[in-house]
Length: 316
Image (cartoon, rainbow, N blue to C red):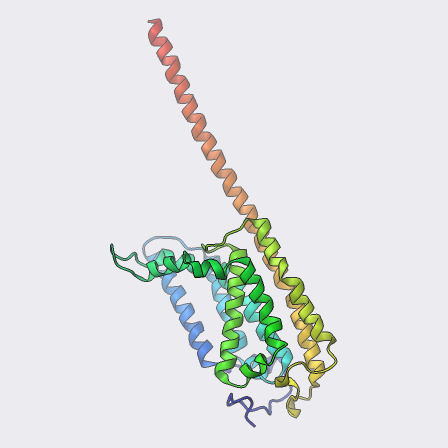
């Protein structure tokens, strides 16, 4: 039997982790992941080719981010996610809370700005277009905390608590659009907070922590609401295939537990990354101040020596 117009059979056997991780690619995300890895690899190779360094850790983190997208969209997790609310929630949380963090720590924008060639005078190349976009009013709006926190919350309540979710689940393009939206929302939410790549909105570290925790109570409450619901909340999952041997309400409660857990774990990871960045920022500032003090001290010493020399000259 076909499910939701996806051309995918619903007589899946009961879910196990081994079955969920079997390769079952969604062509859109498979091509997207390969293109992302290819472009990033090209950027790193271009820098290395001209003798510039690029941290291996950033390459590893970006690759892990792309692979995390492939994990939930190019395996049978995606197939089971069409008929099991709990598996869908794993996909949602991974692609909106884990993948963006890893991708952003890979600093792809910084890599692009360093790797892309500078266009000739008066011409507009990819690097110039990227710079214009980074400084555009549009980018200032979508990275402002009022927007990022608002869209982060709206993506939960405005999707699952309205008929929009069922509408999107009814077609393959709709499902792909929903997953792309989750990834994009995660990127714009964490981009100003992680602060690796340049961007129009770059608050201080305390403000970043406040932004991080501003949306998390709403996220946690969303998970709790699902866990406490006494009936299925979305039609797409109210009649799971008999072959799965699951209860729709129990599966929804599990989905709520997954959503609640993901409001805590990624927050702690981001907080650790922020503290690490803050520490290294303070260290760099201290080194710069020491260097400036050394230069000022050398200048004062040189002026004092010149003064002594002038006195000695007068004494003669």
